[in-house]
Image 1 (cartoon, helix red, strand yellow):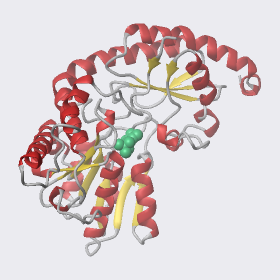
Image 2 (image 1 turned 90 degrees about the horizontal axis):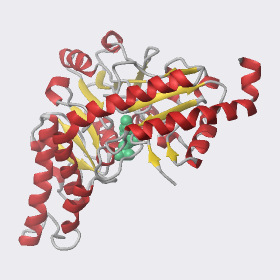
Image 3 (image 1 turned 60 degrees about the vertical axis):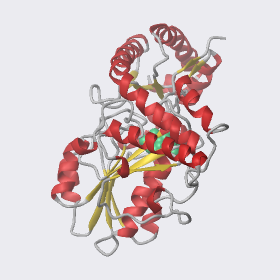
Length: 388
Ligand code: PLP
């Protein structure tokens, strides 16, 4: 059966060139980068080359990049690291209601340890108002954390404006850029961020590797103690093959991003238009224009998102109802609820996130198959008769 993968926000296939770049570091160049003999130095050089590549893509300096095990660790590190290093200054953190769990759960944890968290609302498109951020700042605020783009609905936040506000107030600013780095231009100086989280497997790199950008001078405690790796920020022998893979993935992203984004926007808009036109009672979630080039998120009224997913899967189409990390939870998406979508409707959400290997034919196939699936599910749904 033909299989079409449309869940690139959950994870993306590793590019063959990335795998090729990684392979020597398992067998031939397997040294520990902390060893002073040639095997070690070969691995060290590869790690540093990857660091330079990551820094270059986001306009940072190499020494401002700390490799992590992924986006979750980078977010944890940014929030806990700043919170505990700046406790003497204040205990207040500002974030939003639509962050990924990698930020929200850390905020919950910090709240249980005495920190005060302000969760800012968003509008119907998922946008945070910079003025709300400004108003929420107090003399105890030590950190603002607002994601660059939302992983579920694809809305791109006004991070640059928020960065300006944070800088004027002399408050550290973190952004979770897991869904944007490698997909749209990201520059830490333009965004005026002090900390920024990156994940390898969202940009056609390997899983289990990511990076945290830490602006020079940012006060941060380390929460991984041991050897002196990563300038003592993150102890433990470096995952050299994965770091090399991340380096190659960002290098390729830098070369291909603009063209790929243009192609994805075409496919995205074709899919959105087709879904809304061909399936009645279908609404787009997120911002119509300030959205990630690959994100399509719709609500299909009178059907359960999970039933849609299973039926699509039986046709070889992989999509999602929201974030992969939330799949175990029967609750409607916290992001859609924050956008003001009623819980019953939020259960009918469907997310397609396109990738560089998708084609017009893939989009056509979804548009051919889905209306029939929806019609069949609606005839069986008790929701349709009572609410139509
Ligand atoms: N932040 C966002 C916005 C994400 O979409 C994800 C993954 O879905 C993460 C953080 C976590 O990244 P990782 O899977 O690398 O831990």
